[in-house]
Amino acid sequence: MTGPGFDPVIQGERIALVDLLDRVLADGVVIVGDVTLSIAEVDLVKVSLRALVTSVSALMDTMDDSQEYS
Amino acid sequence: MAAEGGLVWMYGVASGDLEVFADGVAGVGGPPPRTITAAGLTAIVGDVSNRDYGEAALRRHLEDLDWLARTARAHHAVLAAVAGRGPVVPMRLATLFASDAGVTGTLQERADDFRGALNLISARSEWGVKAYAIKPADPAHAAEEPGRPVAGRESPAAGPGAAYLQRRRAQLTAAKDARSEALASARTVHAELGRFAVSSRVYPPQAPDLAGQPTPMVLNAAYLVADERASQFAAAMADLTARHRFVQLTLTGPWPAYSFVGDGPGPR
Image (cartoon, rainbow over all chains, first blue to last red; front, top):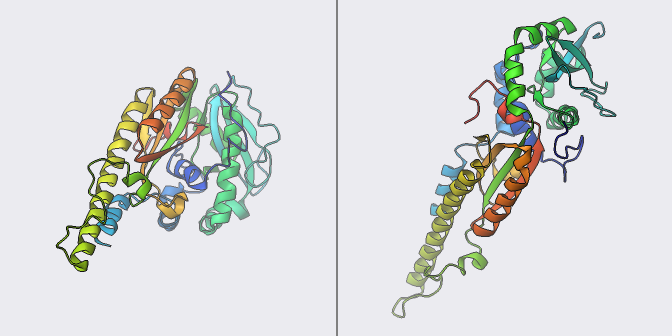
């Protein structure tokens, strides 16, 4: 069976990196490989990735403040 | 076989009867993907060097956004190519094994999980939908709203200071209204799209500077939609776009089913 229009490199326009990272870092089946510990267990990486790309759940609250009191 | 001192990068798992072939797709680190079959399942893997992908190297590389971007795109390109032929369960980025034996063992140990996941995503695709609040201060949108206090319509007796405060208050009210309208729209959009989906998942909103949009994101969701309903889903998106003017909607996909195979918090 064939999926609906997957393109190996480009889907319509170039995929936004943040959308991709939301998926490939936060999701997918997490398997602890037998060499490298799962990325999620590497605190250094986890923290820095969060700063770089993961979404900010407190964003809406921050936005509320900045819009009402700025 | 993995080269001496090399590691095996696992992209994903497909059913053993799927003819997996990611033609012309360069894998992570360059080598084209290959397959390892066990327990009626096929793992799509690639060979990478310990020097560049061992734990110490990964820690270092993952701090480098260019490396991360390149690697994530290469990982995705292989999965997207395979997903074009049939269901594939994506692995999280940087799922690594010391040897093919580790991959084989994992396929055998977790065969039921993989089959369950493949069953869930078979003939279904993931679609991403994001909603951005329309910039509240935009007069083009504020003006459309009947009954809204009009900025600048101060009472005659008021001095310049009071007039300013009144305008400012009206602006803030407008901003607040637009924001609650956008959030309400986001909830409606999510509920309506959910009717076409087998499962859905809400991600936290992306920060505006990362999302590349000046206005705040109010919805960042993924929907697992049966391929036969994909056109209905797209039509619903178009309809919602027309009806909800306080949000701007974007659709991405089809994605390999990244958001619906995890065993963490899971679909919600």
